[in-house]
Every structure is written in structure tokens, then in C-alpha cells.
Image 1 (cartoon, rainbow, N blue to C red):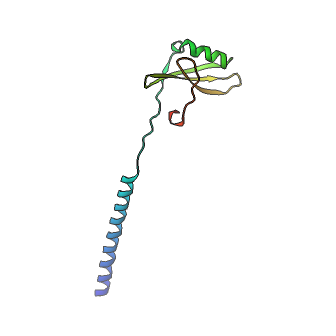
Image 2: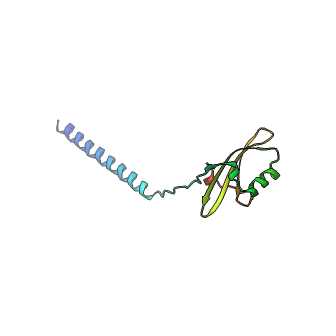
Image 3: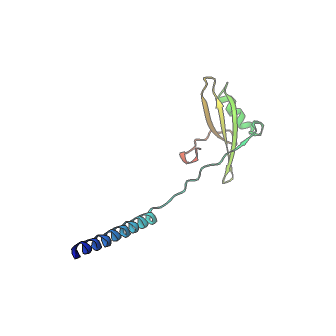
Amino acid sequence: MKRIFFTAAIAGVMFCTVGTANAQVYENSESETPFVEEQQTVYTQIKEQDLPQEVRQALKKDYEGATLSEVYSSEKDGVVTYKLVLSTPEGEEKDLFADAQGNWVQKVDSDLE
């Protein structure tokens, strides 16, 4: 009978020790893992007439026949970027990005919505 009690007590101590060790490993690994928050560019919808003339000219020149369906703008570090959603004559929907001077801008993955 003493052996059963002694075995149960040792098993209980081992169970508690393993649970504590796992909690410590989890706690340490969590604090050592760096967390980098990616900032996505936030665009606000604007009216088509608020789009700079240079951007409209670039759109007309480079995407002749396309229909502009939505226009957005975003300002980051004093630079305004425009997001244009358009439909091509082939029926494709495209998202384009331009600066205020009408230059097409290539967006990086962290800026895409």
C-alpha cells in the first residue's frame, strides 16, 4: 500500500514539474520572439474630379479605353499616392498606383490591401 501511495506522489510531483517546465519554455520563447507590426497604407476614397490633371493624362495615355471606377488617395511622409481601380476594354479589373505628377508607382507587398 505504501508503494502505491509513494508511486502516486512521485507521479504527481513529476506531472507538476513537467507542466511548470512547459510553461517556462513557452514564456521564454514568447518573449524572445520579436514582433514586427507591418503598417499598411490606408487609402481614402475621393471623387474622380479631385484627381490631379497629370494623373488623368497618364491614365488616358497609358490605358486608353479603360473605365475608371474608383479613386483613392493616401498621404505618407508628405507624399500623396493615388490608387486607381479601373476596368480595361478586355474586361480586366486593375489596381494602379500613381504619384501626384502622374508617374506610375510600383507598390511593395506591405502596402497592398
